[in-house]
Length: 293
Image (cartoon, rainbow, N blue to C red):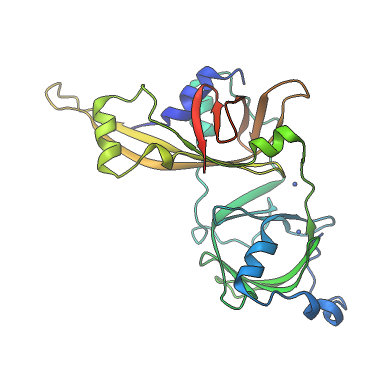
């Protein structure tokens, strides 16, 4: 069985390659003002929680980000036991495979101090709770433009942790504003064989399933196509293919003030990606055209 993430692998050929939280057992005396800032509707909560919230002190949960595409990303201490293995929506990653194939992918220099989990979030109809898949439920205590306090209860062991966050810093430069958003691939690259294209069509995949979501707080989530192939030892039996979606979570930053390249970096390595502005709704990543959603 051989796995090929064609788009990111080809990208590597073409490219030159942060929740103030305290885990509190009591309310910390904050109950006096919390009710003044609890959302009164689902729409209000959805609008206010979007973005990245981070920890300024110590605690297991380092950051929590709610993205425009209905996805959350939670970053926790590497030693955290808040998430139980097997109960968390998987965060797939193709960095290991890419490193095996391309020396230009940089390996991490040290063990990561945090780990990330991702999945879909849903705001309750009353605007006071947020479900993180089936993993945990967030109950909002205080939510303003700069502060976010809540209790989070984990489904596996019913453990509840009190968290207080502040909004993360963001890059408001014009080039980052143009870059931020969700981008979908415009068309299939020409490296797919007819058999692979047939498998993509059979699975109902379109180029728009390849999506990169980039935030101005430094997060990048890359959803790409992974293609598995199985070749029979019998030359008369054709190869079979299996296409699936592959997700990579990373942080990103501009290579330098003059460069149009960004560096995507996570616990498994880093890579450099060239970015070219085509228009407000079109952008090229390492030569591949994407449309803004």
